[in-house]
Amino acid sequence: MSTYVYGITSASHPSLPEGMGGVGDPPREIRILKAGELAAVVSDAPEGLRPKRRDLLAHQVVLSEAGAGGCVLPMRFGSVSPDDDTVTGVLTERAEHYKERLRALDGKVEYNVKGSHAEEAVLHRVMAENPEIRSLAEANRRSGGGGYQDKLRLGELVAAAVQAREADDAREVVHALEPYAAAVSDGPPSTGWLVNASFLVDRGSADEFLAAVEEARKDLPHLDLRVNGPLPPYSFVEPGPAEPASTTAGADAGAE
Image (cartoon, rainbow, N blue to C red; front, top):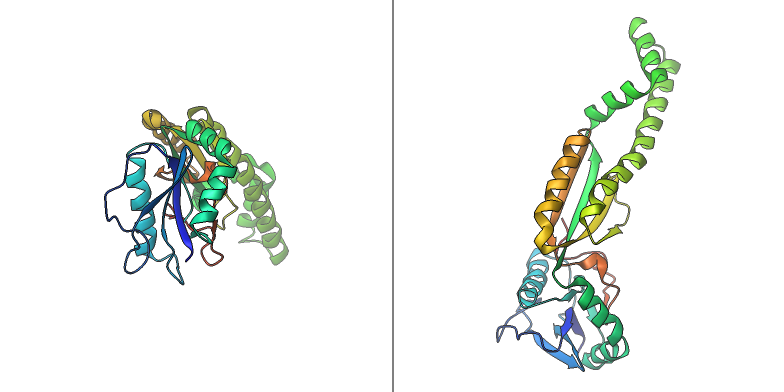
């Protein structure tokens, strides 16, 4: 039977509650596989697993319970390995890498920050910054709205200016927040977001990071910034002894 992998930790990690369940209906019982100084938190993998709310939550609960006892390298939802031996084999093969990651991520959490433009606010900013756009908009206004070509030209100029601002604003957000993080990981491009970045933050410094987000909101009022966290540091763990199933790739317990 295939093995579902929740995360990797040290072999000395405190045990999880006996009989704890994970993904699946009924929930599959959580097991610990050990290989040298490392261990993997696993269960049997249900057939036809999909990122349903119940299973996403179960994945997150297992990681939260394990994380309460020490550092865990979280696997993304849907990470399935062919069998237990494959999991322990990879733990042995990549032992030094996983031990380094456990040391580096100990005491740290992930915050994901996404940003988009507030439409009215960014239009006002673009108008204020671009004399050509202001001039054309005023000319159109004086002529009762302008002709078709004038409106088209204005729309093209505004769209180009907003697009240029997207790249600048994404850099500004990361620049404002990265001093408060141990590492930054760019997320995949996502429709509707001009920035999608994850920040690795010391758990004890989380308040400082969140205060920096609030300061960025004040400094960049034309942006809508959304923060998700604290999360297990998904974005700072390389693929482990299991790959997300094709039907669930990209989903994780921290997804919005």
